[in-house]
Image (cartoon, rainbow, N blue to C red; front, side):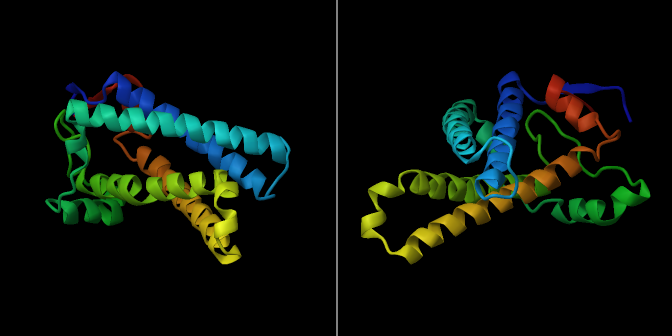
Length: 197
């Protein structure tokens, strides 16, 4: 491991990442309470906090989309199959046998091929499902008379399924964040912006 460091994550990226994490965890926690999995805030307070966090997250996503397109950072998420097999082998075997990481981040390539695919899935499938189904449920009084009970149920199940997909992504993301050259290396990089090469 070299002592060379590169500045990978800009200030807004770090703000976006951590704010998004807080809002998503808040929505997951209140979502479980809304579904009756536990009782802490009470149903009404959980719904209010869930909705407030959702609007804050939507505002953050809208600004983040604007930021990514105006700075060109959207290119970081273009999927590639180059070295995908090497990354897969590393996470399946190499990470447990001490093999060197096959990917070195740069300012122009921050994410390895598996990360690019995972983030693309998050941005193109999971986020829109959460967003669209959540807004449909929030304003369901405007369309419930025109919809069948089966349609309303389908929207509710879609929102719940998307939330569980988000939870699975979050668990995998947290685990992989601990797989740097030290357990906190990637987390420190997302706090300071600097990553060791």
